[in-house]
Length: 301
Ligand SMILES: [Zn+2]
Ligand SMILES: [Zn+2]
Image 1 (cartoon, rainbow, N blue to C red):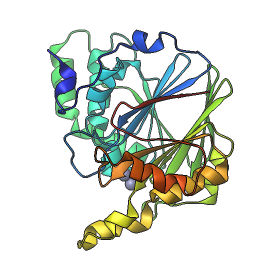
Image 2 (image 1 turned 180 degrees about the vertical axis):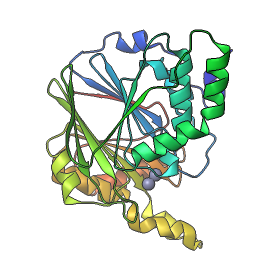
Image 3 (image 1 turned 90 degrees about the horizontal axis):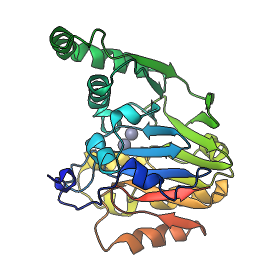
């Protein structure tokens, strides 16, 4: 059975070990596990990005379908070193319960999951665990070797260094997605390589500072030129708290990054229109611009 064809798009089935073949340990490997948005799209999972740095694997946000996409590249919930959340908008956390339970029931032995997010994360995790209470009691009751509920260790931050382990450093800074707040961006540094994940934000000084000199910036974007044409106020509402392609590119230019990776496309990036999106970015940024479908992979370092 080919589990990767369910979205109507064929993806190569590769194992984690295959990915690591020829993998240079000094690099950070970025995989867009979901390039979609709240708009349901049969070909795009919800917002999430997988980062491999040395022996550590981080998932940033966990939108719709994330574990199916991660499975396509040989990564399961049990492989995650930590889950990082940029903010608590539903499209970025729809599959939080899936990540928590799938890790729990597939782990044999202690498997605490660190979750790093903005203030408010602990309340959301606690509420998710409360919603899972019946399932948790069924499984503890049924499996002799499952004796405790999922162990989640939540860390809430808005700025500063939040992780320093095995050569991987993670730093967060506040972003501006108001009225959604607090929201944060993450910077991962590993052996000279660095990646910044902006999440949903309009341009802001704190993001510029966090991204300064990074190898790559992963930025969510909307096409403001297209969204502005839609005669629905509720959709137009999103214009004021997201970056356009041009704004994300300008952020990349100010920060001096080498590579800009676009994701969370609104409207969904249609096949054949990549050059149009690229041209909008190129007007503001001279570096490399990457965009595409779910499972696009970029290595930096
Ligand atoms: Zn958002
Ligand atoms: Zn979003």
